[in-house]
Length: 570
Image 1 (spheres, rainbow, N blue to C red):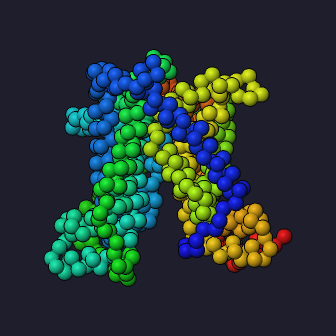
Image 2: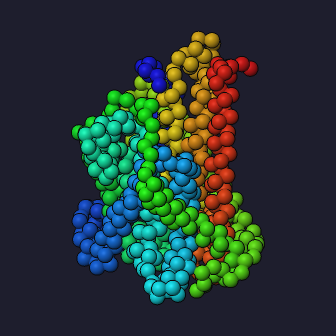
Image 3: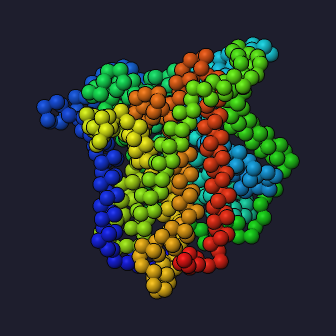
């Protein structure tokens, strides 16, 4: 990473910064401020807390408030119970297939949680495969997928990889000689983990847990698919779509959702404040991983196999449903065919194209904005440049349903130039929502890529006669290609399964992306087969995009190793 001081800014750089700030102001700050303002406005231009008082006077709203808080908290707890042993066993012990296990553990993220919810109903619902077998063998029926239990179960299984990935990194960065010293002093087993390992891995755990809390609190699709409406996100959606855009209760719910998302970020920072987690050495320092005793290996492998079966069950369930003709009150579908895929091919090709268009444009805008912000922050002395990073990153804490409500309120009545169409009825608003919501992911990738590129490479190019624009185009961008591509893929993947903003902003099926189509199919038992087929296509698009991006990143890195300055050649 470069330690050189950033160079003075030019008028062009100042203009680019101003354009980025204006974009973020119009499509992020103003819509959110509008939501907050309406929640406190009394209709006469003044401010009041009456809308919040009215919210807590409605029993359904109070119930939804506590349900959302409880579901998010319990999802973090159960996600932790899954991720902690998985990360600890595969990192700290000699474990066959550790890399494969960690890779399989991330698979839930490539499937939309509301798609997995349907599969989980078929497998673990009241009349699902598991309960049919338990009822036949033991006359037992487990309420796994009933009501809020089902939401917690689905959310924990879908989002635990956030904790797993962060914990794996944190555990790998701990000097294991500290564990050896604790063992020499008599600590072992659970006491060793509780007193030494977990406290040192706390930054990674807290970061993952905060992400899980925010994602669960924000999720709209899973509760709706499971027909659970007594939560904040579904109530915000239902109030705005049924009562109307003027309903103040919908805005109060939105403000509460923003508040708890920001609270999760603040609490995660507060939990780590004033504590030192640094070690003198990184990683294992050459020490061998510990071996499991035979009985420990049996328990560890048993737990991991159980977790992986649960992790892969939504994928298996959706695959079976997409090929099954009838799957009702039976352990497996009665028969299999390609009928559902034929239905999708006839009815939904437009949705596939819309997804590629919206997500492709959004991801492209994200990497352009992310690269520009990273360059302004790390390579110039532009005043207030870090404010761009802060403002862009706040999008992570803004729930999709809240941003969509802000768009509908802010841009209502606004017509697109040269087009006889309202902005709120255009697919462009969906694409812009994807851009804003996914910008933090692309920005982090671009920032990391530029931090790893020494400024002397740019200075050498300029010394050879290249101007600023040519240096950026021929040196900076090619050397950042891996980070830029990673940011593009991450933005594309997460936008492709976005439902919270999509369901609010989609006004016609002709403009609907795949996520909206899957949701519509899943609303009826007859349409769940085609919905599953469309879900399988969505997963394949995301998976193939991820695979080819990794291949491209590796080949690009190999081509850049020889001489970065060769890009200046004509």
